[in-house]
Image (tube, rainbow, N blue to C red; front, side, top):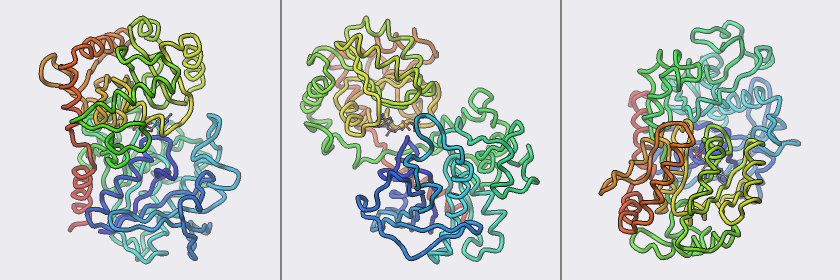
Length: 480
Ligand code: ADP
């Protein structure tokens, strides 16, 4: 099959979260299954064509009269072609995908409507006929609507079916309805039922949910949660009306990028058979962070956006109690200003116990996954979550809230011979502290802990199986 995959971020070129990882590894896994996968994404100012070996193409795309140039990263066996849109909307004075200094770019509606439209012109420019066009998250959610409304007589997209994937329902791309005209959207589609209207605003995600031929989200459990009033973020009614077309397919991880036996970010390597390297990574990490280098004090790791979604406010509330435990904590993340300031301040107060690193640091993220003894992920909600899968693979049993993809991937330790981590339910600091306490108690029982690590490290989170599920879905849609 020919698949056109549209995403506002693709690692390693651009990444603000899990979407970037998925947009790199799902197309690669589909390409490995023998399909031609063409990925299209913006070329942001932060993407240096020379550094990534991109080629400038003598082609241009047309998005309703607006032209843009193209860079390409060549594909190969098992690796998809990636096309980058060169346009002032993405490049110019801007460096980041969505905004800077915590403020979104005000023209994001125009920027991402352009992404979806330009992407749909790529088949013509390349002379390819995609069976499936796969759009992701709010940024490209207008795509399924454009495909229907603006490509009815386009020979390159004749018969193309659209798939829309929700990576996070909480970010819907909501804007004042006054943007409709500027985006060239007809007012007839600004309606509640099967349209783009949401509380008198323009909602990009609703276009994906209403007009895509099939919907997916990134874990089976999240696919159930978003059908409820609590998990549906106001879109549960729309989602329930399409529940027959909605599939939960667990994200995989890039097992080459995240492999403790050959991870270039680590000062020592290890695997399930020989964990000695893990102890060396822990010691080096403690030293790197300025924590006392002590093997007998457990180290709890956290990596992620500092946002309420990730339960970081819960961590903040639990911190006085956590700091009374005989343990060290390391947190890497950036996000909400209040949380950044708070965790930095605590880190200054208790440098012996708590190390906070504010920012985005791929190498340190790897060293925390590898060097920590346990990994804390107390998310309010979690569509899939990648970090818990990385930590399972790195012999770092997760402590997680039993929601979304966390409940699909972490099995609670039963105190005996089952389980890969520690789950808790209630959204309160007491429950979080209780779960951390339980994990640390088990950590002191070396044999029990080795068993938990071994079971987690033996799990298969590679993309293979999930890519086959996407493939089956695509084949069903394409009728072949
Ligand atoms: P989300 O997409 O909701 O942010 P995921 O767990 O699905 O959460 O994916 C987050 C990805 O981003 C992971 O690969 C994680 O390691 C990475 N990440 C998040 N914050 C940071 C950071 N501050 N430094 C390095 N990597 C980070």
